[in-house]
Each structure stands twice: as C-alpha cells, then as structure tokens.
Length: 102
Image 1 (cartoon, rainbow, N blue to C red):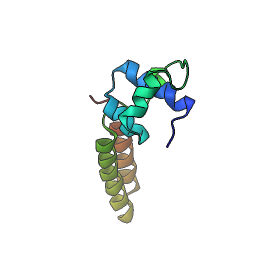
Image 2: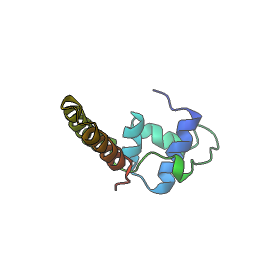
Image 3: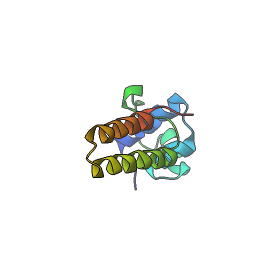
Image 4: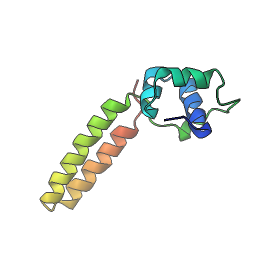
C-alpha cells in the first residue's frame, strides 16, 4: 500500500512526537523503509500533522488485541440484554485504545 501525502504528514507528526519507527510502520501496514523514505522527503516538503490529528502512541497490534477483548465483553453484555454494560465496555475500550503508550 502506498503512503499518500496525507499519510506522510501523519508519519512526520508521529516522528516529531518521538514514536518508534516500527510502531509508525505497523500503524500504516508498511515496513520501516517507507517511513525512512518519508523522512527523507519522498513526498516533498510536508508539514507534520499536529498532535491532535495523530493516532494514539503505542504498538497498534497490542491496542487492537485489547480493543477486541473490550468488544467481546460488549457483545456478551448485549446477548444478556445489558445495554449499559455494553456501552461501558465499548467506552472503556475506546478510551484505552486512544491512550498514548510508549
């Protein structure tokens, strides 16, 4: 998958924030060479995306596994007609997913 100019801005924002190149590459489903290319100007002079436009910091694989567990908990609550527990599980999952991790 080729990175777009919009992706390049996010990459540069993540680099400026201090994210691991490995985590950045994993977020986009690319290898670290594509990240290095963006850093070297393969997409021209791009302005890094501001912090509020960046994905959460941390390994996306771990975040995905955690989110899946929260979603499974919500589905179980829905099967039991406990809408409030389902809502709480999804809100907690999203909050954890959106948190920044080293």
